[in-house]
Length: 139
Image 1 (cartoon, rainbow, N blue to C red):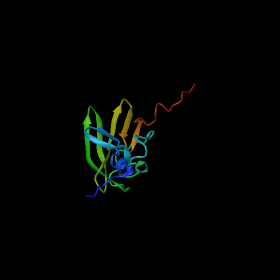
Image 2: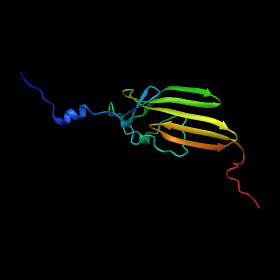
Image 3: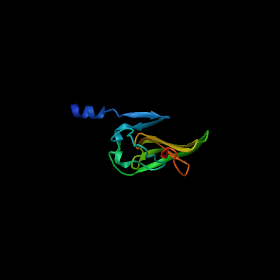
Image 4: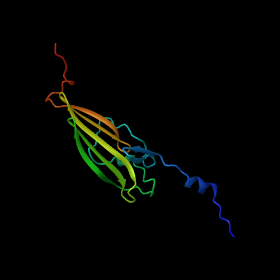
């Protein structure tokens, strides 16, 4: 009877744990991105993917465009919430869950984005012709 043995390299690679982040029952994969939740300043994406942060699928090892699935738009208390999943185009591995919100508060439009792949960002824009935050007092 011939005995099979695994080298230490084969054992360690087969036991490699993926960094998964469950959000709303969707496991997001930290091994597919270069940086988790990068700070994007005021760049809030309602759709699309931040491909510069995608290093490749941890399951199939391919770096390709992504699929956007399970897209939904909800309105709650005057706030629009857009959510969708980023999936690997080749093996349909879930890379991240994307959430984008839009609301109007007083004289401002407020935008937020939270996604393991695309990052976190928020922006506020005045709905008035002249932004009151930009006006200077004249004496």
